[in-house]
Image (cartoon, rainbow, N blue to C red; front, side, top):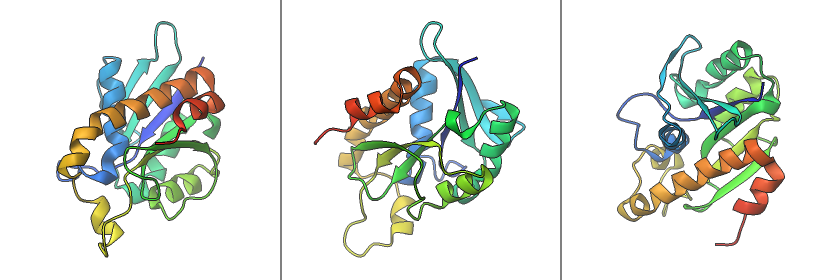
Length: 192
């Protein structure tokens, strides 16, 4: 069976729902809506929606951990066990400070770059070799603390561009599962 676990990182609760740190979960909401999926509570401490990527396409298990970002590893490793999947079938969608807003980058493996959610997932899964859809949120302006910046809502100009960024990241997930990472990188890694 062609199943992929797609995890959108973020923090639980309505006070975080529209913040930059929750852009991974926003992408999963876009994917679920696109495929008429509905999230429900899973015993692995996550909200899960199972959808098909196209007619007869791969099954996508869309998961939003109910834990805070920095302790996402427990729910993710629990879902990998529940669905009998290895990290080669794991895609994590997350915010990335080191990429300009309105840009996505894709890769498999590598370090966590100071992202505590990625660090916790790599530790809990015993491997950093999962695919990442890195959604650029840009660096904070001036001397603003990055921790404060990621927990703030997008600015008004960013909110205008956000729907197309979320759609592009959702498209990237679908291309990865249908054609592989290299094909997705060719399509989405382009000069802006």
